Length: 407
Image 1: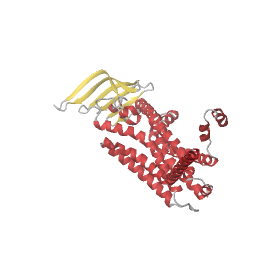
Image 2: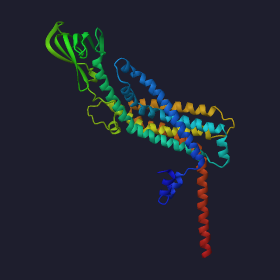
Image 3: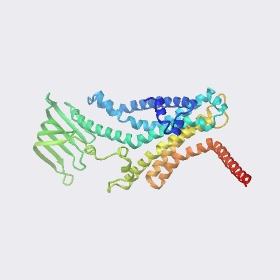
Image 4: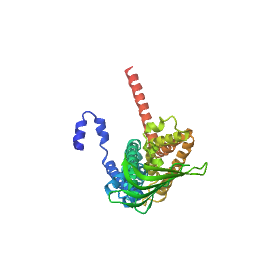
Protein backbone atom coordinates (compact mmCIF):
# COMPACT_ATOMS: atom_id res chain seq x y z
CA UNK A 1 0.00 0.00 0.00
CA UNK A 2 1.41 3.36 -1.03
CA UNK A 3 1.35 6.48 1.13
CA UNK A 4 -1.30 8.18 -1.03
CA UNK A 5 -3.52 5.07 -0.88
CA UNK A 6 -3.18 4.97 2.91
CA UNK A 7 -4.05 8.65 3.27
CA UNK A 8 -7.05 8.26 0.94
CA UNK A 9 -8.33 5.35 3.01
CA UNK A 10 -8.08 7.04 6.39
CA UNK A 11 -9.07 10.58 5.30
CA UNK A 12 -12.85 10.05 5.76
CA UNK A 13 -12.33 8.60 9.26
CA UNK A 14 -9.43 10.66 10.57
CA UNK A 15 -9.34 13.95 8.67
CA UNK A 16 -7.28 15.69 11.37
CA UNK A 17 -4.72 12.89 11.34
CA UNK A 18 -4.29 13.14 7.59
CA UNK A 19 -3.78 16.88 7.85
CA UNK A 20 -1.03 16.38 10.41
CA UNK A 21 0.64 13.55 8.47
CA UNK A 22 0.92 15.80 5.43
CA UNK A 23 3.85 17.89 6.50
CA UNK A 24 4.59 21.02 4.51
CA UNK A 25 7.02 20.57 1.64
CA UNK A 26 9.84 22.44 3.37
CA UNK A 27 9.46 20.33 6.51
CA UNK A 28 9.58 17.12 4.48
CA UNK A 29 12.69 18.40 2.70
CA UNK A 30 14.51 19.15 5.96
CA UNK A 31 13.29 15.96 7.69
CA UNK A 32 14.52 13.82 4.79
CA UNK A 33 17.99 15.34 5.10
CA UNK A 34 18.00 14.80 8.86
CA UNK A 35 16.96 11.14 8.66
CA UNK A 36 19.44 10.31 5.90
CA UNK A 37 22.21 12.07 7.78
CA UNK A 38 21.25 10.32 11.01
CA UNK A 39 21.35 6.94 9.29
CA UNK A 40 24.75 7.65 7.75
CA UNK A 41 26.41 9.07 10.88
CA UNK A 42 24.99 6.43 13.23
CA UNK A 43 25.81 3.61 10.84
CA UNK A 44 29.38 4.81 10.33
CA UNK A 45 30.01 5.33 14.04
CA UNK A 46 28.52 1.94 14.95
CA UNK A 47 30.65 0.22 12.28
CA UNK A 48 33.79 1.88 13.64
CA UNK A 49 33.02 0.96 17.26
CA UNK A 50 32.07 -2.59 16.21
CA UNK A 51 35.40 -2.97 14.41
CA UNK A 52 37.35 -1.75 17.44
CA UNK A 53 35.47 -3.97 19.87
CA UNK A 54 35.77 -6.97 17.56
CA UNK A 55 39.55 -6.89 17.98
CA UNK A 56 39.06 -8.24 21.50
CA UNK A 57 37.64 -11.43 20.01
CA UNK A 58 40.13 -11.92 17.20
CA UNK A 59 42.08 -14.29 19.45
CA UNK A 60 39.11 -16.67 19.34
CA UNK A 61 39.57 -16.91 15.57
CA UNK A 62 43.38 -16.92 15.43
CA UNK A 63 44.23 -19.04 18.48
CA UNK A 64 41.16 -21.21 18.93
CA UNK A 65 39.94 -21.79 15.39
CA UNK A 66 36.57 -20.07 15.73
CA UNK A 67 34.76 -19.86 12.39
CA UNK A 68 34.25 -16.47 10.77
CA UNK A 69 30.49 -16.96 10.71
CA UNK A 70 30.35 -17.60 14.44
CA UNK A 71 32.67 -14.65 15.08
CA UNK A 72 30.45 -12.24 13.11
CA UNK A 73 27.30 -13.61 14.76
CA UNK A 74 28.81 -13.19 18.21
CA UNK A 75 30.04 -9.64 17.72
CA UNK A 76 26.83 -8.62 15.92
CA UNK A 77 24.96 -9.14 19.19
CA UNK A 78 26.83 -6.12 20.56
CA UNK A 79 25.56 -3.77 17.83
CA UNK A 80 22.24 -2.80 19.53
CA UNK A 81 24.18 -1.65 22.59
CA UNK A 82 26.45 0.49 20.42
CA UNK A 83 23.43 2.07 18.70
CA UNK A 84 21.80 2.89 22.05
CA UNK A 85 24.95 4.69 23.20
CA UNK A 86 25.71 6.52 19.95
CA UNK A 87 22.19 7.54 18.87
CA UNK A 88 21.71 10.53 21.25
CA UNK A 89 25.05 12.02 20.20
CA UNK A 90 24.62 11.32 16.49
CA UNK A 91 21.11 12.84 16.54
CA UNK A 92 22.50 16.02 18.09
CA UNK A 93 25.32 16.21 15.54
CA UNK A 94 23.11 15.65 12.51
CA UNK A 95 20.57 18.26 13.66
CA UNK A 96 23.28 20.80 14.48
CA UNK A 97 25.26 20.46 11.27
CA UNK A 98 22.24 20.10 8.98
CA UNK A 99 20.70 23.31 10.28
CA UNK A 100 24.11 24.98 10.30
CA UNK A 101 24.61 24.05 6.64
CA UNK A 102 21.15 25.37 5.78
CA UNK A 103 22.06 28.59 7.57
CA UNK A 104 25.27 28.90 5.57
CA UNK A 105 23.38 28.22 2.31
CA UNK A 106 20.83 30.98 3.15
CA UNK A 107 18.00 28.42 3.22
CA UNK A 108 16.98 29.30 6.77
CA UNK A 109 17.18 33.01 5.91
CA UNK A 110 14.74 32.49 3.01
CA UNK A 111 12.39 30.43 5.18
CA UNK A 112 12.49 33.07 7.89
CA UNK A 113 11.75 35.80 5.33
CA UNK A 114 8.81 33.73 4.04
CA UNK A 115 7.18 34.02 7.46
CA UNK A 116 8.27 30.75 9.06
CA UNK A 117 8.25 30.93 12.87
CA UNK A 118 10.99 29.38 15.03
CA UNK A 119 8.69 26.47 15.83
CA UNK A 120 7.97 25.81 12.17
CA UNK A 121 11.69 25.89 11.40
CA UNK A 122 12.50 23.58 14.31
CA UNK A 123 9.66 21.11 13.69
CA UNK A 124 11.67 18.71 11.44
CA UNK A 125 14.43 18.58 14.04
CA UNK A 126 11.88 17.91 16.80
CA UNK A 127 10.27 15.11 14.77
CA UNK A 128 13.69 13.57 14.22
CA UNK A 129 14.42 13.86 17.97
CA UNK A 130 11.11 12.20 18.92
CA UNK A 131 11.75 9.30 16.52
CA UNK A 132 15.27 8.84 17.91
CA UNK A 133 13.91 8.96 21.46
CA UNK A 134 11.36 6.23 20.73
CA UNK A 135 14.07 4.11 19.12
CA UNK A 136 16.30 4.60 22.17
CA UNK A 137 13.49 3.44 24.46
CA UNK A 138 12.95 0.34 22.32
CA UNK A 139 16.68 -0.40 22.45
CA UNK A 140 17.15 0.25 26.18
CA UNK A 141 14.04 -1.54 27.40
CA UNK A 142 13.87 -4.58 25.10
CA UNK A 143 16.43 -5.06 22.35
CA UNK A 144 19.72 -4.41 24.19
CA UNK A 145 18.96 -6.62 27.26
CA UNK A 146 17.97 -9.55 25.04
CA UNK A 147 20.92 -9.16 22.66
CA UNK A 148 23.44 -8.77 25.48
CA UNK A 149 22.02 -11.82 27.26
CA UNK A 150 22.38 -13.82 24.03
CA UNK A 151 25.94 -12.49 23.64
CA UNK A 152 27.03 -13.55 27.14
CA UNK A 153 25.43 -16.96 26.76
CA UNK A 154 27.06 -17.54 23.36
CA UNK A 155 30.46 -16.32 24.60
CA UNK A 156 30.16 -18.59 27.65
CA UNK A 157 29.52 -21.62 25.47
CA UNK A 158 32.27 -20.77 22.97
CA UNK A 159 34.96 -20.16 25.58
CA UNK A 160 34.11 -23.36 27.42
CA UNK A 161 34.10 -25.41 24.23
CA UNK A 162 37.33 -23.81 23.03
CA UNK A 163 39.11 -24.47 26.33
CA UNK A 164 39.41 -28.12 25.33
CA UNK A 165 41.33 -27.21 22.18
CA UNK A 166 43.98 -25.24 24.07
CA UNK A 167 45.72 -28.43 25.13
CA UNK A 168 48.72 -28.80 22.81
CA UNK A 169 51.76 -31.03 22.93
CA UNK A 170 54.66 -29.76 25.03
CA UNK A 171 52.89 -26.51 25.99
CA UNK A 172 51.83 -25.27 29.41
CA UNK A 173 48.29 -24.20 28.47
CA UNK A 174 46.84 -21.61 30.87
CA UNK A 175 43.13 -22.36 30.74
CA UNK A 176 42.50 -19.61 33.31
CA UNK A 177 44.64 -17.57 35.72
CA UNK A 178 44.34 -20.38 38.30
CA UNK A 179 44.37 -23.49 36.08
CA UNK A 180 47.33 -24.71 33.97
CA UNK A 181 47.52 -27.97 31.99
CA UNK A 182 50.56 -29.60 30.37
CA UNK A 183 50.38 -32.49 27.88
CA UNK A 184 53.54 -34.38 26.81
CA UNK A 185 51.97 -35.84 23.66
CA UNK A 186 48.61 -36.08 21.94
CA UNK A 187 47.51 -38.75 19.46
CA UNK A 188 45.41 -38.22 16.36
CA UNK A 189 42.31 -39.61 18.06
CA UNK A 190 42.63 -37.00 20.85
CA UNK A 191 44.11 -39.21 23.58
CA UNK A 192 46.51 -37.39 25.91
CA UNK A 193 49.73 -38.84 27.36
CA UNK A 194 51.80 -37.48 30.22
CA UNK A 195 49.30 -35.04 31.71
CA UNK A 196 50.13 -32.50 34.43
CA UNK A 197 47.48 -30.23 35.96
CA UNK A 198 48.20 -27.33 38.32
CA UNK A 199 44.84 -26.50 39.93
CA UNK A 200 44.66 -23.38 42.14
CA UNK A 201 40.93 -22.73 41.77
CA UNK A 202 40.14 -23.61 45.40
CA UNK A 203 41.84 -21.21 47.83
CA UNK A 204 43.85 -23.10 50.42
CA UNK A 205 43.69 -26.35 48.42
CA UNK A 206 46.27 -26.01 45.66
CA UNK A 207 46.72 -29.34 43.91
CA UNK A 208 49.14 -30.87 41.44
CA UNK A 209 47.74 -33.76 39.42
CA UNK A 210 49.82 -36.21 37.37
CA UNK A 211 48.41 -38.90 35.07
CA UNK A 212 49.74 -41.35 32.51
CA UNK A 213 47.00 -40.64 29.99
CA UNK A 214 43.67 -38.90 29.56
CA UNK A 215 40.89 -37.88 27.16
CA UNK A 216 38.75 -34.80 26.63
CA UNK A 217 34.98 -34.73 27.02
CA UNK A 218 32.52 -31.86 26.54
CA UNK A 219 29.43 -32.15 28.74
CA UNK A 220 26.76 -29.42 28.46
CA UNK A 221 29.24 -27.05 26.80
CA UNK A 222 31.71 -27.54 29.67
CA UNK A 223 35.05 -29.23 28.86
CA UNK A 224 36.35 -31.96 31.11
CA UNK A 225 39.49 -34.11 31.16
CA UNK A 226 39.23 -37.74 32.20
CA UNK A 227 42.57 -38.88 33.65
CA UNK A 228 43.74 -42.47 34.13
CA UNK A 229 46.43 -43.98 36.40
CA UNK A 230 47.63 -40.90 38.22
CA UNK A 231 48.02 -39.14 41.53
CA UNK A 232 46.77 -35.98 43.19
CA UNK A 233 49.20 -34.13 45.44
CA UNK A 234 48.17 -31.49 47.98
CA UNK A 235 50.00 -29.81 50.86
CA UNK A 236 48.14 -29.62 54.16
CA UNK A 237 48.80 -26.04 55.32
CA UNK A 238 48.01 -26.92 58.93
CA UNK A 239 50.51 -29.76 59.28
CA UNK A 240 52.80 -29.01 56.34
CA UNK A 241 52.55 -32.62 55.16
CA UNK A 242 52.25 -33.67 51.54
CA UNK A 243 49.09 -35.68 50.89
CA UNK A 244 49.20 -37.98 47.87
CA UNK A 245 46.08 -39.63 46.51
CA UNK A 246 46.47 -42.25 43.78
CA UNK A 247 43.60 -42.92 41.42
CA UNK A 248 42.76 -45.16 38.52
CA UNK A 249 40.29 -42.69 37.02
CA UNK A 250 39.58 -39.06 37.81
CA UNK A 251 37.59 -36.32 36.04
CA UNK A 252 38.63 -32.67 36.12
CA UNK A 253 36.39 -29.81 35.03
CA UNK A 254 38.34 -27.25 32.97
CA UNK A 255 35.74 -24.54 33.54
CA UNK A 256 37.00 -21.69 35.77
CA UNK A 257 35.13 -21.26 39.04
CA UNK A 258 33.71 -17.86 38.09
CA UNK A 259 32.42 -19.35 34.83
CA UNK A 260 31.17 -22.61 36.18
CA UNK A 261 27.64 -21.35 36.01
CA UNK A 262 25.95 -18.75 33.89
CA UNK A 263 23.24 -17.98 36.45
CA UNK A 264 25.07 -14.86 37.63
CA UNK A 265 23.61 -12.19 35.38
CA UNK A 266 24.95 -8.80 34.52
CA UNK A 267 22.79 -5.73 35.09
CA UNK A 268 22.93 -4.90 31.37
CA UNK A 269 21.08 -8.10 30.44
CA UNK A 270 18.38 -7.98 33.10
CA UNK A 271 14.84 -6.79 32.28
CA UNK A 272 13.66 -3.50 33.73
CA UNK A 273 11.30 -5.05 36.30
CA UNK A 274 14.14 -7.14 37.78
CA UNK A 275 16.36 -4.07 38.03
CA UNK A 276 13.84 -1.91 39.86
CA UNK A 277 12.36 -4.76 41.94
CA UNK A 278 14.99 -7.49 42.44
CA UNK A 279 13.57 -10.86 43.41
CA UNK A 280 16.69 -12.15 45.16
CA UNK A 281 16.28 -11.58 48.92
CA UNK A 282 20.00 -12.19 49.53
CA UNK A 283 21.06 -9.39 47.19
CA UNK A 284 23.38 -6.92 48.87
CA UNK A 285 22.45 -3.28 49.30
CA UNK A 286 25.23 -2.22 46.96
CA UNK A 287 23.98 -4.52 44.20
CA UNK A 288 20.41 -3.31 44.68
CA UNK A 289 21.57 0.29 44.25
CA UNK A 290 23.58 -0.70 41.17
CA UNK A 291 20.57 -2.41 39.58
CA UNK A 292 18.24 0.48 40.43
CA UNK A 293 20.57 3.04 38.84
CA UNK A 294 20.84 0.88 35.71
CA UNK A 295 17.04 0.72 35.50
CA UNK A 296 16.57 4.47 35.90
CA UNK A 297 19.40 5.06 33.41
CA UNK A 298 17.45 3.12 30.79
CA UNK A 299 14.42 5.32 31.42
CA UNK A 300 16.25 8.66 31.44
CA UNK A 301 18.93 8.26 28.77
CA UNK A 302 16.53 8.39 25.78
CA UNK A 303 15.23 11.76 27.02
CA UNK A 304 18.70 13.24 26.57
CA UNK A 305 18.05 13.09 22.83
CA UNK A 306 15.43 15.83 23.23
CA UNK A 307 17.79 17.94 25.34
CA UNK A 308 20.71 17.57 22.95
CA UNK A 309 18.57 18.40 19.92
CA UNK A 310 17.10 21.46 21.65
CA UNK A 311 20.63 22.68 22.40
CA UNK A 312 21.50 22.33 18.72
CA UNK A 313 18.33 24.10 17.57
CA UNK A 314 18.83 26.96 20.02
CA UNK A 315 22.41 27.46 18.86
CA UNK A 316 21.31 27.81 15.21
CA UNK A 317 17.83 29.34 15.33
CA UNK A 318 18.13 31.79 18.21
CA UNK A 319 19.67 35.22 17.88
CA UNK A 320 20.35 37.19 14.73
CA UNK A 321 20.87 35.32 11.46
CA UNK A 322 24.38 35.70 10.06
CA UNK A 323 25.05 35.40 6.36
CA UNK A 324 28.40 33.78 6.96
CA UNK A 325 27.26 31.47 9.76
CA UNK A 326 29.81 31.25 12.56
CA UNK A 327 31.70 28.79 14.69
CA UNK A 328 31.06 30.23 18.13
CA UNK A 329 27.50 29.02 18.67
CA UNK A 330 28.02 25.48 17.25
CA UNK A 331 31.16 25.10 19.34
CA UNK A 332 29.29 26.29 22.42
CA UNK A 333 26.54 23.75 21.73
CA UNK A 334 29.07 20.93 21.40
CA UNK A 335 30.82 21.89 24.62
CA UNK A 336 27.45 22.10 26.39
CA UNK A 337 26.53 18.57 25.29
CA UNK A 338 29.94 17.27 26.40
CA UNK A 339 29.39 18.92 29.78
CA UNK A 340 25.94 17.34 30.09
CA UNK A 341 27.36 13.91 29.28
CA UNK A 342 29.99 14.32 31.99
CA UNK A 343 27.37 15.59 34.43
CA UNK A 344 25.11 12.64 33.64
CA UNK A 345 27.90 10.14 34.38
CA UNK A 346 28.72 11.92 37.63
CA UNK A 347 25.07 11.92 38.74
CA UNK A 348 24.76 8.20 37.95
CA UNK A 349 27.80 7.44 40.10
CA UNK A 350 26.42 9.52 42.95
CA UNK A 351 22.99 7.89 42.64
CA UNK A 352 24.66 4.48 42.90
CA UNK A 353 25.85 5.49 46.37
CA UNK A 354 22.63 7.21 47.44
CA UNK A 355 19.34 6.36 45.70
CA UNK A 356 17.80 9.60 46.97
CA UNK A 357 19.77 11.32 44.19
CA UNK A 358 17.98 9.40 41.41
CA UNK A 359 15.65 12.39 40.65
CA UNK A 360 18.78 14.28 39.59
CA UNK A 361 19.07 11.87 36.67
CA UNK A 362 15.66 13.01 35.44
CA UNK A 363 16.57 16.66 35.93
CA UNK A 364 19.80 16.34 33.94
CA UNK A 365 17.90 14.60 31.13
CA UNK A 366 14.88 16.93 30.94
CA UNK A 367 15.78 20.40 32.20
CA UNK A 368 18.01 21.37 29.22
CA UNK A 369 15.16 20.52 26.84
CA UNK A 370 12.66 22.60 28.81
CA UNK A 371 15.01 25.57 29.06
CA UNK A 372 15.78 25.39 25.35
CA UNK A 373 12.08 25.18 24.45
CA UNK A 374 11.24 28.23 26.60
CA UNK A 375 14.12 30.20 25.11
CA UNK A 376 13.33 29.31 21.51
CA UNK A 377 9.53 29.09 21.54
CA UNK A 378 8.71 31.27 24.56
CA UNK A 379 8.14 34.56 22.67
CA UNK A 380 6.07 32.79 20.04
CA UNK A 381 3.94 31.04 22.68
CA UNK A 382 3.47 34.31 24.60
CA UNK A 383 2.33 36.08 21.43
CA UNK A 384 -0.04 33.21 20.60
CA UNK A 385 -1.48 33.37 24.13
CA UNK A 386 -2.00 37.14 23.91
CA UNK A 387 -3.77 36.79 20.56
CA UNK A 388 -5.99 34.03 21.98
CA UNK A 389 -6.88 36.13 25.03
CA UNK A 390 -7.62 39.14 22.78
CA UNK A 391 -9.85 36.99 20.59
CA UNK A 392 -11.78 35.78 23.64
CA UNK A 393 -12.28 39.31 24.89
CA UNK A 394 -13.46 40.41 21.45
CA UNK A 395 -15.90 37.51 21.33
CA UNK A 396 -17.27 38.44 24.76
CA UNK A 397 -17.73 42.06 23.72
CA UNK A 398 -19.52 40.97 20.57
CA UNK A 399 -21.77 38.68 22.58
CA UNK A 400 -22.59 41.47 25.03
CA UNK A 401 -23.24 43.95 22.21
CA UNK A 402 -25.59 41.51 20.50
CA UNK A 403 -27.50 40.94 23.76
CA UNK A 404 -27.93 44.68 24.34
CA UNK A 405 -29.14 45.12 20.77
CA UNK A 406 -31.76 42.42 21.21
CA UNK A 407 -32.89 44.01 24.49
